[in-house]
Structure formats: structure tokens, C-alpha cells
Amino acid sequence: DDAYVGGILHDIGKIIFANIQPDLLERMAAFCKDKDIDTNYFENITAGLNHAGIGALIAHKWNFPDSLVEAIKFHHEPLSCNKEYRDVVFIVYLANAFCNIETETMHYDLLEKKVIAACGIKSEEQFKTIHSRLENAFVREQQRQEMIKERGGHNV
Image (cartoon, rainbow, N blue to C red; front, side, top):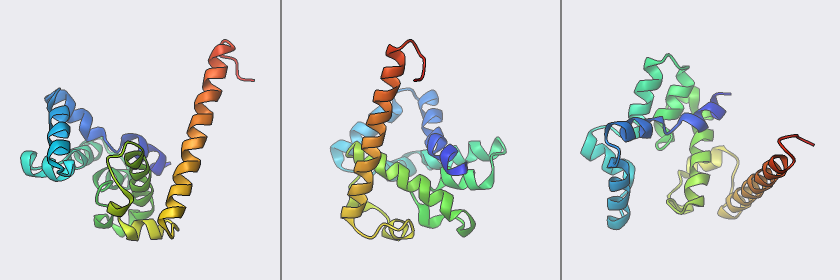
């Protein structure tokens, strides 16, 4: 459950940034892409805290479970988390990595190899196969949801 919720909430800090400075994230993303700078690194040097750290502070303040706070805080730096919560953090990191690879904001070569290995993935080819299966499952689910809508919202 914590990995599922962590996958949904891991970028909650971006919502905070967006509410404080509505166009800040867009400007930062454009600048980082133009200059080929990692956005997390840029967030750290400009704001003193990145979206993961801000999200973790909010999660802690809202009394989220420690495993969820860790997943939010370390979804970009999974090897820095408390060992007790590595399973949850690694799964959230991996899910985020799949999404970033999908949007071409990350490449396989930049992934934490220890995390990939801990998740049982032994090669880039195996990673790509898993990514492809997840992508196909997502497309099938989208199609299923469209069919349900076309039938007036009744699941068949």
C-alpha cells in the first residue's frame, strides 16, 4: 500500500512549488533542458531544497507513515534512504524511472544499478521488456476505460 501511495504522492513537493511560484517549475524545467542540467540538482542549488525534500516535510507534518515519508524524500536518491524502508523507496524510484524513461527525461544509463539489481532486473534488455509490458498494460486499460464510457459507464 505504501508503494502504491508513494507512487501517487512522490511529487507532492512539485505541487507546493507550483502553488508558491506558478511558472517556476516550467521555467526551471526549460532552463535545465536547455542547459542539460539535472532538475533536482538545480532545485537544490537555487532553492536550497528540492521538491522531494519539501514533499517529505509536508508528509511528515501530516503524520504519514515513515515508509511513505522516505519514499517521497528519496525517490530520486534511493540509496540514501533508511534501510528499513528500501523496498518501498526502491519500488517508487523504479516506477518513477519508468515514467521518466517514457517521457525521455531519463535514460537507462543514469539509473541506480544497485536499485535495479535489488529489484531483480539483470540487464537493460530485461528493463526494456518490463517497461514495454507495463506500457502495453496501460494502453489496454485506457482502451477498456474508453469502452466502459462508450457503454454509458457500465462495466461488462
